[in-house]
Length: 245
Image 1 (spheres, rainbow, N blue to C red):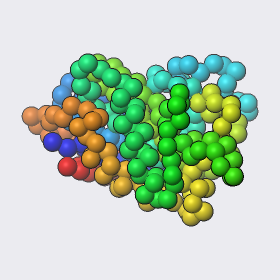
Image 2: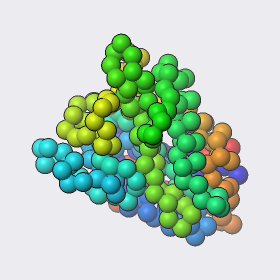
Image 3: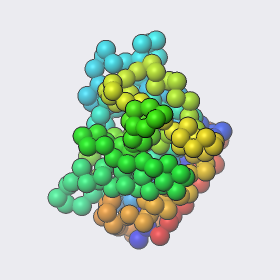
Image 4: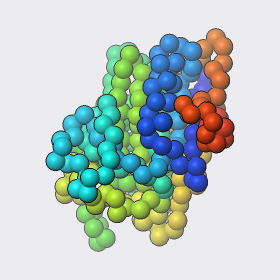
């Protein structure tokens, strides 16, 4: 058994968030139905703000920028070029333990960024991966996590700041947190590290933790490669499926 990884779009082929949300829903339905195995979508988005269920209207961007309301937990965040976004769409074991699922994702991300020279960790009471306060500043979030579970299967996932512009976070209170900052692998190391440099390592670490993340299964007939809803889009044609066992 293996997690199936689909690289839907990485620079320069940034993916529209709404199109990818439709794709997530399609893949989620297939995983629930058992016609597609556990799948992780890897993507770099066009700039977008998304609002989790706990977001309040006064927390929206101050300049009127478009926001996509979605069903994940958490509050408001930003996605854009230079961020590696991963959507694990997988079956969870029974009894459901969403907190454990999030904790395993945190451990995966922390292991990956440490390989790139960033000593990330967790912060009690806050999800995601963090760089703790030092002479450079207060606690800084390097990766956000927000998930939704329906019919035993997950949607949404994590966003890892690799080389993205951090200024868009200045238009919001990211994840509703007012007493901490945001950072990226590139910011912390002083070297440009793009999502394309990180994606294979991330896939390897997720595959190594498959048993902790989900219940392994495969459909009787292998599912076709994942495609964006607009199949004429070059990003859909170039999507590259991989499986890591």
